[in-house]
Length: 193
Image 1 (cartoon, one colour):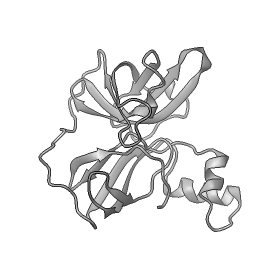
Image 2: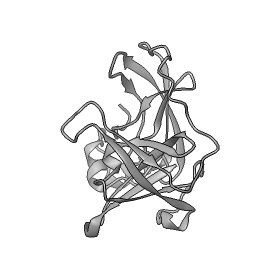
Image 3: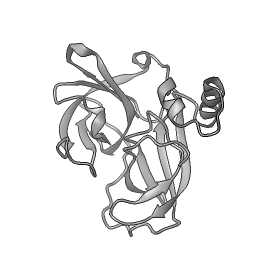
Image 4: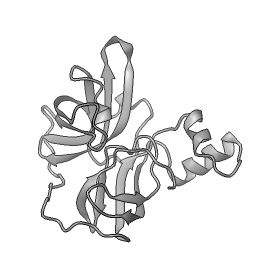
């Protein structure tokens, strides 16, 4: 599902992915929540594609339950939302008994790719291509506003695993899966690392 947060009159917006962890609780990246009073909306789960002005899609209002931890922490960036009147029939269980992934394990991230800014594309342009060529390459691999599943490998296991996988703006907050089980949450926008 896609989540969007709008703060106060500033219209500061965040766009990312979230997923249900119970019939009425959503887990997403903490940066998605622009303050406790932010208006947060989510689309119905499982849409294969979204319109860029996604208010046109079916959506519902969410309420912030928790932002974990405080803003100054660097290792955890989570928010838990209440889905209000929307009740999901499917969710990912938080299974803390799952065996820790090991180096070389295959990892998948699910999320809605967003449209990346020119500045972001310039930052990740490694081969000297024009901005248009870079945008076309990125958007061919990870089409904007589409539900994407990417695959990579864990490079370094442990408390904060490092993995090599293609992600872009919008996919932050999506589930990280190992062997089909929830292993974490994507909180960083990385490209072809």
